[in-house]
Picture 1 (tube, one colour):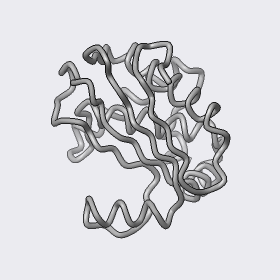
Picture 2 (picture 1 turned 90 degrees about the vertical axis):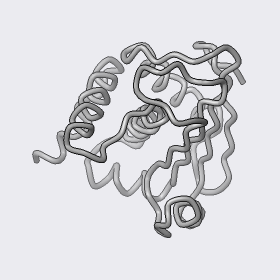
Picture 3 (picture 1 turned 45 degrees about the vertical axis):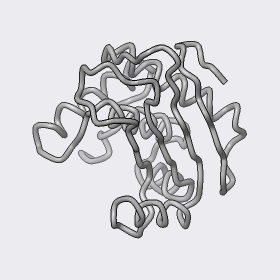
Length: 165
C-alpha cells in the first residue's frame, strides 16, 4: 500500500491482538508523515517502510538475535542504511518492529492512550531510521525535542511528561 506521502508501507501483523492492519497503517502513516514534515526528512522515489507488529516473545527473539539483548522492548528500528539526520534516504527506509504487550503495559504505566503511545513509538522508531539517536545526552535531548515537536503537531501531549510526575 502507498500512503499519502509517497512511501510504500509493507505491514505484517505476526502475533498478538493488535488493532486491524488498516488502522495500524493509518496511525503509522500519519505519525511518520508528520515526522517527515516537521523534521524535513526526505527519501528517494520508490521508498518503502516495513512494519512488523508482533508480541513480546517474538520481540525478545529479534532483540536477542540483532542486539544481543534477549528481552522484549517497545520498538526496534533497522535502518536500510547508515545515515545521519539530514541525509536523503535510499528507497529502503528500513524496518520497524513493535511489541504489543510492552506497548500496552507502557501506555498504562505512563497514563497514555494506546494510540498516543503507539504514535510516539512510531515517531521514535522512524527518527532512528533517519539517524537520530539517544546514546549521548546531547543526542537524547535533540531526539526527544524532535519527538515532542512532532507529537505536538499531531495534537498529542509531551511524551516525556510522565517522567516529571
